[in-house]
Length: 407
Ligand SMILES: N=CN[C@@H](CCC(=O)O)C(=O)O
Ligand SMILES: [Zn+2]
Image (cartoon, rainbow, N blue to C red; front, side, top):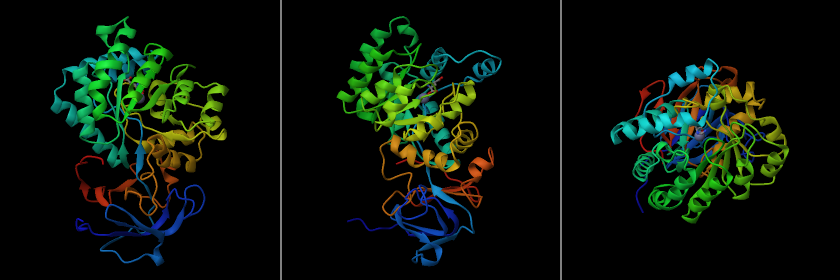
């Protein structure tokens, strides 16, 4: 039995606390006004009103500021080299996004050293921490040889437990016109080598990437090695991705910009989460998903920043929350839930995205009295403090600490 050397911390004077636990507070967000939360041993020990807060070793008076669970980022591509700003500029001049741009990043990633990739991934995790993301899933997908994907999984696994093998991103240059041969290699040597370092298997099911049968082969090969499926689907046009994800019981299907009523009905009757990625649609001038239709049908919706150099070079879930409310007609409450508890559902985690006793002590404070300001004041760095495992991981008031492994 190791001694509990960590000190308990009480955050008091919280103007509005979002718990995401309707049994302890008001409505789906479990809101508590004039609230307090106590962290002890890396987990939430107590939540309630300030005047009933138990004693703790360390106290912080939040002076009326809002506190939320740390954001849960369930969709990011952080292990990459290079950047594609010119491609973005061409898109803004009218050139449509196409999956082919991914090959530019594949070349830059293959040419990068381990140290460069590790440093870039850590830089982006630090950046996402400063905007409140305390859990971050990280995909591979820009290496696409066994050695490069293995390197990418190892780099991701050194920084987060949520590692996704996305070897089936697009057929790499050396397999141009031979997607089936690439799929056969992914389903054998690639997954055999990389599965031990990953938790999830993902595939880009889209024209110019992989069709339904190829995607099915990759996902089922990953599942046979104990990986849990996720799907990039229906991003650029209607397609088989949503139905495939539901058929295989995928944790989530992501993008979901073009859906039929049958897609929405299938999702509503499943446990598959629809993860919306408004940063990608913003940066590619793509159609936003019909979030309202999904939510009104009872689909569980998550929000992700989808940080990657091609479609969405942002780590900011506050930015995505603002777009989700203004352009996708989600209510502020729905958007906040989607970026916290929704992301946790997409990662099948019950210990994050919520502030209830026993949950990880991952939280953020805003320089604002209410979570509504995240949509009301877009583009403003409102996140003032971030706690991970009950420890202050970053504060705008004291300079930021390096984000160690996100466990
Ligand atoms: N659409 C597929 N994959 C990434 C984009 C990858 C890239 O363009 O580099 C996404 O989720 O947006
Ligand atoms: Zn993606």
